[in-house]
Image 1 (tube, rainbow, N blue to C red):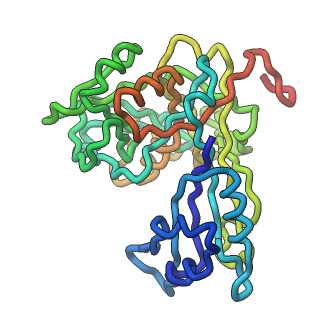
Image 2 (cartoon, rainbow, N blue to C red; image 1 turned 120 degrees about the vertical axis):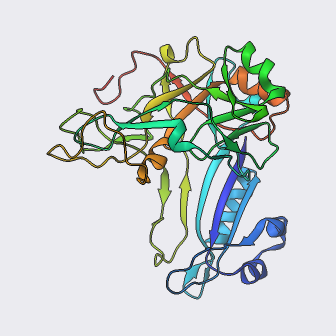
Image 3 (cartoon, rainbow, N blue to C red; image 1 turned 45 degrees about the vertical axis):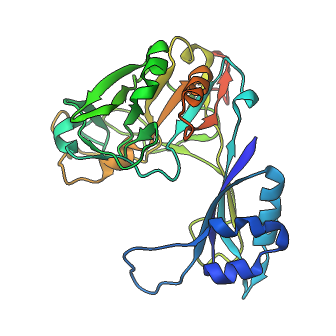
Length: 326
């Protein structure tokens, strides 16, 4: 197992590098200035860094980053995620597949004409999405496995045989013979009664559903710029009942880690189209969870999809009861 660390420093690249101990000099090529794009108000240059390392080095990094300079820690925040090798995970397990890092996401040129979004409830923001035509994509990367900003997956033709041998269906793209869209069925549900899933107390009076939040192991105040010490944020795996992990190689949950707005009174009509200018559906679509079998993940890697990223899951007995919930 290795560690992927996403770091936000409090100071510029030059100042940050000047503080580095010799044992952490290997970080220098990965430390870059954070380009804010459009700046609102006062802007203070900060350095950021994304690096893959060992758990021991990550702990050294945290200890060093906790050092105080001008009354604040050198590192503002660090998000730590575990990266597993295939041999670290049981063969009968599933992994959560993640968006490949450092790859520019393909852009759906005709999203509003391709994906139909309709309100699924009169009282909340839940939506039903349906693809009605082939995707027309602008693809910048040559990566063999890519994910659009709207959470649709595409595969290079060199992966077709591998995917189809695992029963994964493909759909052609418009004006593109090198890639196809991966059709991901909504065929599993993750356990909402087991950490890190938190069921929020905002039940919708219309559909009776709760919003779900994915908690992290957090030390410090992640959102407060004035918080003077380092904040440490560790990602944690979801749990899947054993009967959910049967007969499927790639699946998506209809559940989403999204806080839906709700209303006591109807505020739109269920079945009506969501206005195309609304931005929230993008965040909803991006908050869903995809899992693939570890056998498929291994086969994709061996077929050349070396940008694949995944997080392990916990497979738990179907009758496991947590806090009185099943």
